[in-house]
Length: 139
Image (cartoon, rainbow, N blue to C red; front, side, top):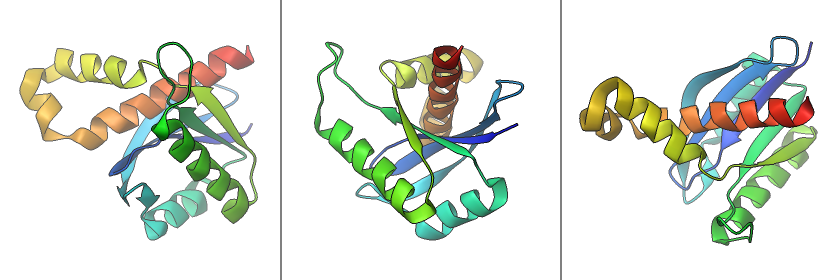
């Protein structure tokens, strides 16, 4: 059984989800705060210490036509830093529409107030969707 950490990269919040290769389930975790795309180092270190992942997945934001954008390059840079700092292979997964899916789920549970109250919840639910996408691509 391998533990997986998945990330939905963002400039102010980085969504986090955990899962494993046996049950192929994903669970949202508390998001990591970031400043200009640079994650809070203490929060990131704690995640890796607590979960000891064997696999890392980072969502790759692409335009709807599949072309890259500025956030694509930033997410790639984030993933490559994780590879270097934690000596772990990072898998990138197309994340088109994951944030829209997460917003829809939160909205269905609590309306506009729920959407406005916790931006980090959207990011972490997006990370869950990214991890579920990874699982479906591995099947």
